Image 1 (cartoon, rainbow, N blue to C red):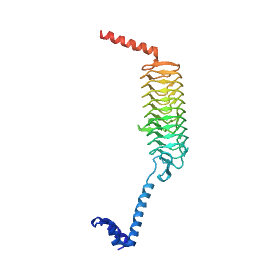
Image 2: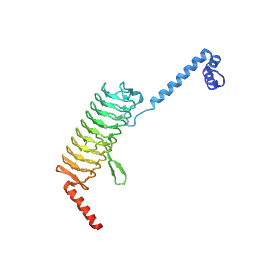
Image 3: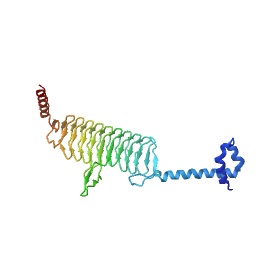
Image 4: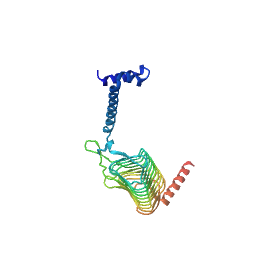
Length: 300
């Protein structure tokens, strides 16, 4: 019987005999102990090698576990081909994928994912559990927890056989400088043009911005705003909470939309608008008054 087989049998039954270390010495001797140590190292290296080779990414980029490193500032994980400024902080649990570029003084929170080839400008703060893909983020931005930027837009068609087919979503999302994006907001990548958020714009929590939307500079979008695909928004536009904008609409600069308004056609002149469909604010107010008066007459 070989020393290796004996070592395995002793390891399994040692608990029946008092001291395990004493039993090993008595039964195996020095040669047996050396074989047992060699076997233990072989088993460990086999398991370790399997764990490395079995990990791969879903995007087909060919990344493996062995290509990732631990970032010195914060303890996060980064791919060896990523370019990260030494002053950047990547918190533990965050992952920076291949060919991503992270600027100076950037802070990436735990759980955040910076996808392949994503660019983040200097002094930008990325919150917890943010997902960035197919996008560029400007300087001095604040991206709050749970934001998703650069995922596919909602585009489908039905072919002649009645099958639902996905339209290609191959372009990017571009976020300007000094932009703030609230928690759990989603901004889709473009299909026929990039989705763009202009400089100094501020977006509240739970906002949906669809593919191909272009928003100008210094805009403010309050909570639960929903903008459908291919909308063009000018500069200095303000949208109150729960404003809805239908697809392929253009909104001029310096427009303000009252909360819960719905934009169904182009707005070409600056000013205040409200209602469903959105109309100039003084007209909407007349509609509200007339509706109340009609209600009082019907109740009298």
